[in-house]
Image (cartoon, rainbow, N blue to C red; front, side):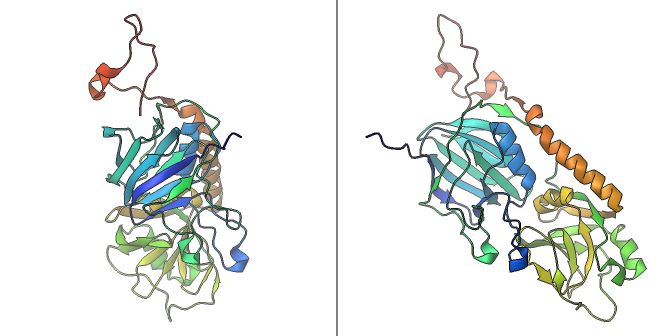
Length: 341
């Protein structure tokens, strides 16, 4: 009887903020569970485009990656915030897909920009499904962080090309965030609403999967008569103003209701930019109309659909290939294929 081939990624070391993440769990907010899922959903789409497959679960790596071994022949894609990476000691390109043969060791070091890097695999990671998703939602106690000794199941890979890259726009260094009015924007004085768009903010070091604190340059923000409002539904992108007057942008694992007043809401298309802003990054906000926000969302969805068409071959200069002399030649000619880790 033929046994089933075990497909897995073996974890030898993992940073403190490495989790399996997919698109999250929509539809549970009435039960007090926010959607969760990847902080940078665009990175999941980029990984899927590079691997030529539908979007699937990936490893989300906050700050630091880890040391991983292929338990079988794998195809991998590295997306999101750039991190230093190598396969069996040879550097590999970020925003690209590579072959990871069985037994090969992938080292992913610290961030070089941004906040969250992503490791996708052909077939996707396939740990236990909980409430319709495999992503860890640590705030809700669903799943856990990845740890040394884990053997993460990998789904069936239909196969495809490797040594492919994808050019991406910089969303890893802060910048402008488009916002719309929230239900409570008009509770703030007019001068504060105007000042939101003229103030320079700095991404505070205090941040997690629930949200990011942004510190204003100048006067704090606040509502006259106190901070508490009737607790009501909140959503990722909402900008709450807490006791110290510094706005807090809610993200993937935010609570589902809250009583702090909300100054505005970051549109979904710009959530990857705030999620990926590193500590100390400069951020600015700009109010847009609902029509502008809807147009931006439509353009964002079209850009995601176009990702597979933008993937191109990864070509390295011969001087960057440390094992060039080990490449096999047949009758004096190469086979014309690019062999990349």
